[in-house]
Amino acid sequence: GARASSTGPLPPFESVGARASADSKSLTTRITGMPVLNHGLSRSVAKNQVKSFAVAMGLVLAIALFLYRSVWSALLAVSPMALTLLVVYGGMGLLGVRLDIGTSMLASLSIGAGVDYAVHLLAAWKAKDGGTLEDAAAYSSTLVGRAIWTNAVMVAAGFVILTRGEARPLQNVGALTAAAMIAAGLATFTVIPTLARKLRYD
Image 1 (cartoon, one colour):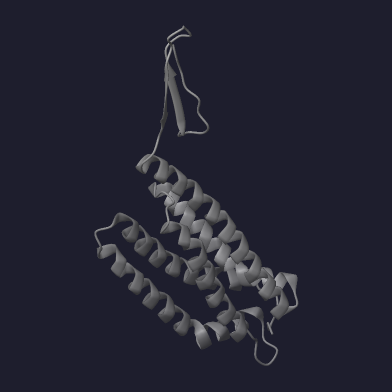
Image 2 (cartoon, one colour):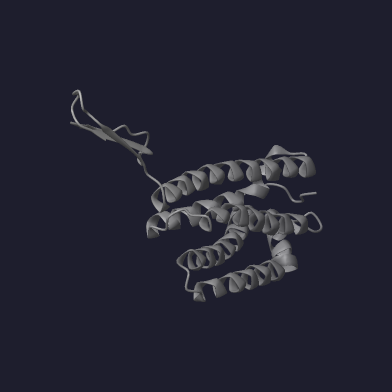
């Protein structure tokens, strides 16, 4: 008979032999090559994605807490980034784009962009002469809105160039990162004016 031992979706060892007898022999083989390499790479990418996301999110939130001295203000600063990640990875799921080395970097890129735009808008957020929250939103958008959108569009245009390459992973990274930049800009000008409850964020 033949018996096989497996540890996971891709068994590293297989044993094949005849039934027990005086002259029975067995053959042990080890699976190697690209299947094993791809399997290990997939598991490594998934683990590193979780670890890098947790570390990046934790550091950004800790810095925001230190700067603003307020849990609510820190959460407000990271909320556009969180919405951007939901949009990007939700879009990947809908389009069937798999997680690989390239797309695993999207979390870090989205975190950096989302926080940058949110911090710029919060730094300019103020209501002059005792105005309302609507006045603060209008003032901050007028002051830094054009700069934020210029940055988002220029960074997106730079990554769109990668979609002209022949390698599929680079095409995915270019298109998704460009979409993440635009999504981060939209999230910033949607989430912060909606959730802001102060007339000034120092």
